[in-house]
Image (cartoon, rainbow, N blue to C red; front, side):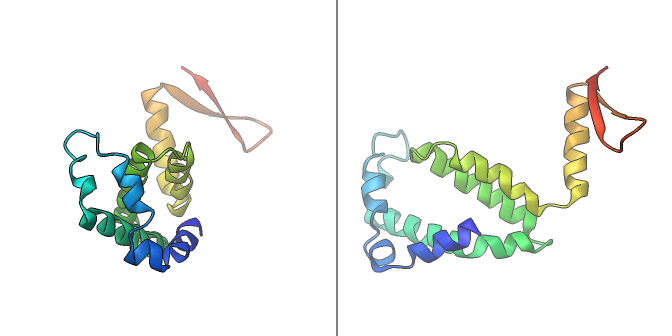
Length: 138
């Protein structure tokens, strides 16, 4: 999985013991209100480096666990929103937030579809000659 291999890539001296390139990346964000002043602190760069490594190495295992899946997904969303705001990595965080929903059961997805259908007033209609559903507005 993407996360586990990203964690493996972070298992090196520069990332864990020099907090590089995290130190450089955070220094570029010191203009941020409230948090910007913290980004100059070396301990913040080390904390972020280690947290990112641990997150990447463990999140997949938590996603496979039905018990911890909602918590892991919540942490994953926070992680990706923060990285999406801090770093110019394009659509990657939003794609991963969406793609990781595959770990949830089909019942979960059906409830999401039903919820969205209610919001937008969409009714599912079963076709006579096929088992596929088509959607139309009421």
